[in-house]
Length: 458
Ligand code: GAP
Image 1 (tube, rainbow, N blue to C red):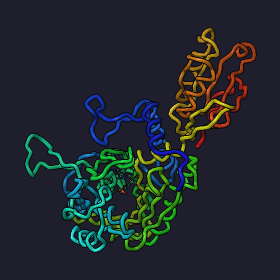
Image 2: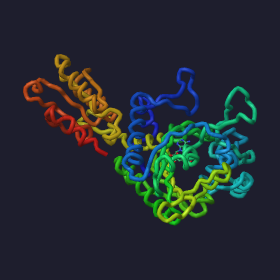
Image 3: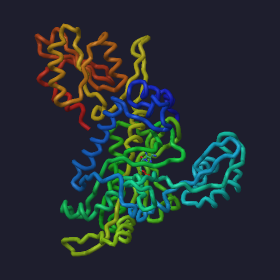
């Protein structure tokens, strides 16, 4: 897909305007680690708040929890992560490049290597005479399996008994709490449990800025339903997630839902779809995964813990292990999609160019910027700023011409600039300038909060 702007340009805008900083920068950085700056942390917070509102608060079905990052190691035995959460990697003996074997095979041949053993991947590399994507030579090490979980130790002894893992997904913290939530919420099936939190994966090939990183946040929902109703709920949640993205104003020409083919599905899954976005660095990149996981996880944890994780229907008295549909998304992935989609440059008049981030007003890092026309009006403008700050994230900007202040705010995606001028003293109105249309209108200060609230609705 043709992208209007190249990725480097967008990344450099995000770095230069304080959305994202290089992690540990003063020490020369740490590869592929990123810190979120002033605007970035606001944007991230707003994305998470919106997800929580739409998936937990406004949902008649769902509740939220916040489980620990470090979990009993048996969790990861039960979930299959200790045995199977691994990627195979190969090294090019010529240029020393390191690659994920499945990605390299897929890119070179279009064949899926999902679920193949390292030996099977070696054979595919040989049979198809795949060459190194960097140097073009065909001289690889054998594929080696590499577990993606970060290992650490609990307590003072660094022995096998004290090994714990940083969770590679938040989902398992939900499954192990199934009984606790069912007991303390009095929720009836169908119901979902959601959470937002950090996950860690020692990715072999992180990159594309914050697209694939080793420390990231996930927003996951595990939705439990009666077996047999799962495919219906699976479609419900695919639509729900797609609508969430659509309502954010993301260009639908750059969005698609990709249903996984039968041979791509995990053995326990009855259906999986990815919501993908046409990022500027690739054709399509996964943003959100929605999977029908059947009763796999609860069954596994039941078996490994010896605790029954089932549901007794209070009306029919039927007892069963619920099926689970899981919509799972990374905060940084959504963040990156939102920024790539929002970034724009346009000419204003003959020779004035503006960069503008077309964020949906509900998630823009700054909602309102209050600008006194001249410094003399600082006192009443500050009062207005303080009053609006009770309800919205506001900035106060009194530096430079009004035009310059508008440009600064366009570049960070502030949807409204409010100018307090000399007429305000007489008519009680301010000028509200809208970011995308650049239209200006006079609005009574007494109506201002409702005016803004109305326009930032999701
Ligand atoms: N519980 C299911 C699960 O974790 P996943 O497809 O591995 O499934 C879900 O991850 C989502 O988490 C992805 O669609 C992506 O948005 C995000 N994600 C996964 N790995 C990531 C990484 N290394 N960096 C950033 N985001 C990641």
